[in-house]
Amino acid sequence: MKSFYNILFYTIPMLIIFTIVLLAYWPGILVSDSMYQWDQVQTGSFSDWHPAYNTIYIYLLTRIWNNPGFVIFIQCILLSLSMAFVLSRLEQYYNINKKYLLIVSILFSIIPLNYNFAVTLLKDTLYSAFILLLTGLIIDMINDCNFFKNFKKCFCLIISFLLIVLFRHNGILVSLLTSFVLIIKYRKYKSIYIIFIAWLSIYLLLTTIGFKILNIQEGSYANKYGPISHVMARLLNTEYVNFSENDLKTLSNFVDVNQLKETFNPYNMDNSINTQNIENLKSNSREYIKLAIKKFSEYPKELFKHYICLTSFLYSPIPFTGSSVFGMFVETDLWEYSSKYPNCNEQSKIPFLLPILKKITIIYQSENWDIITMRPAIYMYLSIAFIFILYKIKKNKSLLLILLPSLFNTLSLAPAIPVFMTRYVYATMLVFYFIFAWFIYEIFIFIKDKKNEGKI
View (cartoon, rainbow, N blue to C red):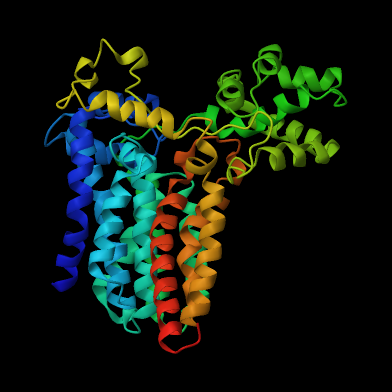
């Protein structure tokens, strides 16, 4: 019961600030992805282009109140609870001062990136919150020798793995890789095997039989072959790369070659996706893959350069020519849905605050600041450094496990690069925030102890 009140204690300040921002942006920010899902929710026709169960989750909430503002408010609660859960673990196991952690929760909620993502209807926000939840459970696991004997905690672990795999497609890799490491680490406990079998079995049932029962349509082929088309565009725009007539003829069966070459943007895969012939991909994708393997094997150096230069899943901490990141959204993007869903338009309940928030958002991710604010690689590398120092201070190598879910999320995006949006690796930022706060506190205590011992 004490743990519940501690979580609630840290949740309240975050939720208050997120709610104020939501009211200013009411009914929240909906971008093209969320509008596509919102349309599915309203029509009752679901596809797995965006994770189907994320869309169904939205659908179920709209049965209570069919308003995006309500759905986003629940999102704010879940994000707040996830961070509060982690903070409560730090208090319980590492005796970090409660008032200090309360300040951390307030500072977390006023960081523009956090309150912006909190009020934007995005699968990435919830997915990242669930990775944070799993991270908190790993902290629990490291410190509680009876973790695997506690049914409630094991059940929560199963649910966290399930939420990760159901709310974003690359989540399956994150859950699999994290599970395998945990199985190796905690192999003496039978429960860890049961947990793995349970979440994986439920996932397979939900995405096979569940998809049939709910009549969920297959995801778009466009996204599936987007990375291949994008690399092809890169090769077409490289002077010394040659395409034979047969190669070009085969390629033209699957893409508009001229459009693919002319619209190529190294930091945005959408242009390449839009050139694809979906029907031909559906009927003969093997031929396209065969051509791709051939060209990639002919020019491995160019393929390597393509990925190493972009490293969009790492978001290079050092800006390079043409590099870019994009994270936060300033306003709702209705596109073709404006007349269909006018209630999704901006209806601010705190109109005087809205322009201030928008201005802060623009400045926060401007070219002058984005090297610090919007490049997750900085936060990832610092998290690794800080957790390494913490393990040295605490003399506990198991602390390295804390980074697993967020690092595996970054790794799992490698096949899909380039993706230049910070939101894909928002989990990296979330994990950094609490590790940084923990690191600062422990360093302060460490220095204080050394002074008391007369060693400083």
